[in-house]
Image (cartoon, rainbow, N blue to C red; front, side, top):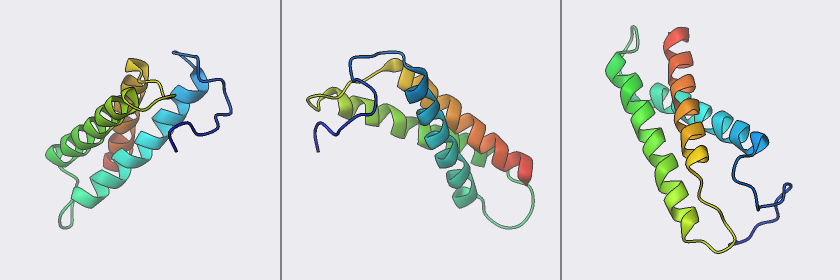
Length: 98
């Protein structure tokens, strides 16, 4: 669906609700990726945390690039920043739990 119904008008660039949604979604992605990348028993390594953040952040960037080419969608650097922040928080939470 190139123009899905939006609860908030799509002519915004910096919207707090959208940014919070991005942070939450990518926090979950960073958390789950760090779980998936961890091998064996013991503490999670810094390499696993970094890999989870990089993979999920790259996904966020490619998603925004994709949105740039879809009619009716808006690509925003603020969304990318929110994605990266969420990825970092998720991976850090996973490391903290371990």
